[in-house]
Amino acid sequence: MRINENKKGAVAVLVLSVVLFAAGCAGYFYYQLAGSGIFTMVMGLLCAAFCVRKIAQVGFLQIDDDGFGVQKGAKFAKFYFKDIEEISVKTIDTKREIDVLNVKFKRTKLDRDTAYGLIQPIGDNDAVILDKYELSKSEIFRKLKEKFEGENNANRK
View (cartoon, rainbow, N blue to C red):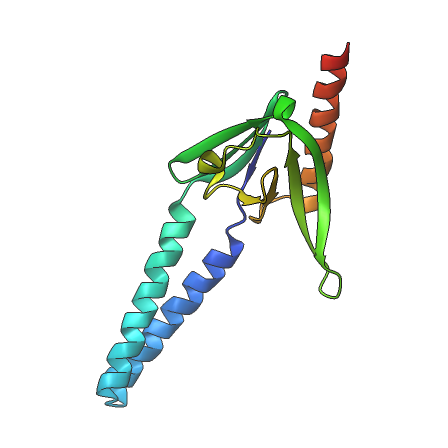
């Protein structure tokens, strides 16, 4: 199963950066705000460029029977369930209800160099999946947990 990154925020910011560029053009040509208008147009273009880059970037979470893979741009890494001890959802901030997917690896099974930029390593054995995907964290957790428990049950038999 492949779950794509949620890019709705980048699309919304792209629209707003185009509006910012248009405001800069209006300021420069109509209101004769030379420096401010040029600065606003440049900032609008920079924002738009980064948004287009984010929208065009390939990013997804792929859940297979034997593990899950994460891709961002050209970098891809697969993490196998046999190397994972526990998958859970941790609450970071209870007031704002901020949850993250936490993956606890078995001792020395987390390769920090491979995980860098894809998932966020915390400590020696823990990693957090921070990105926003098209499915909610609870749905992704349920699917990961289902495959993880299925793999563990198959290994025990």
